[in-house]
Length: 388
Image 1 (cartoon, rainbow, N blue to C red):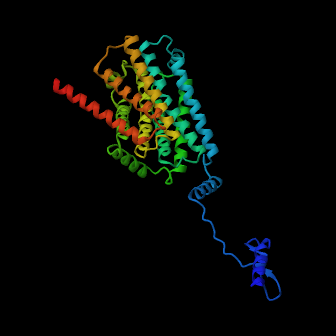
Image 2: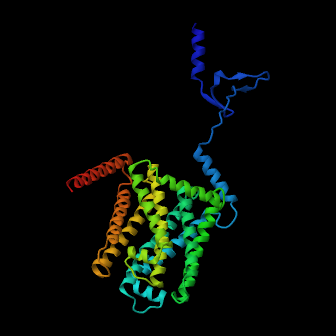
Image 3: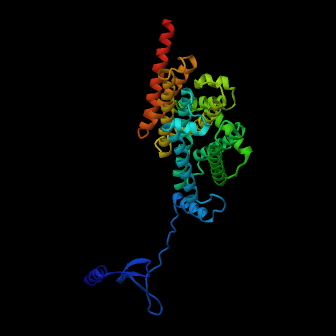
């Protein structure tokens, strides 16, 4: 018995040795082979399965390395979008802060009417829409996220806006625009359409297939009618209203649009009307992206924060320009159309700003607050109707 205890103690007290890198084995528990070789029992290794995030990162890296074609690499995409952001921002700054000088250069008019300058400011705030879109796309290019539906929609919107801008530049009489500006505007519109269209083709998975694009547009229109919560419902309303308003500005008669823009007739105001219509179309696309994010409760992402902040700034600027046109410049009186437009701009500012400020809060709590406010407003309207 004593002999067995001493044997056990000696086995346990022997040093632990790593043999062949496969197993930790006390020296006394080693086995001997037929030729006296010392070895440890082999241990079966389990192969680790890489996570989905690692697989995706590896796949994206491989695609970037093997990417071919125009603007196929994310570095090129980021640079191109950065240049577009700077160009559109410069145009907006020129229209907003050097209004009269810019207007005189573009239209060769030395003493423009105050109403046309007001319309130029509206166009300046609207020019921020493509700048905001290009900025969010540049950020997405850095993170290899341009194949997401959010960025595909914005690329498609920029491609359409750039193409339609070229059409209206061609359609505008040569006597209206300065020849130098017309070339610069055509260059910027072409660059916008080409860059956005090329990246869309690279990232969509099906190229620039018009049939699939049409089906996607139809599905998006149907999705506006079925928001998942009250926050998404407000975005759906704004997106649909902006889409209709942009159609009026782009394709409607100038007389109808001038009632909403508080401007008169003429080729100059018509050209500015088309400019504002294209930017309004982009704002409708961006608001739809926010509606989709609200459906999925992802408003806290940086892309949607930037979109909310940019659109809130544009809407607030348009509201201030409208207020200036009516109250300060005394261009027109307050009409039903101008009051309705100011109310719609106020809804936009509140919606975008609220979601930007509250983006880091619990979205379920936000939705409950919005629904409560909506119910209270509805009850108040009912009370007013009953008293009336």
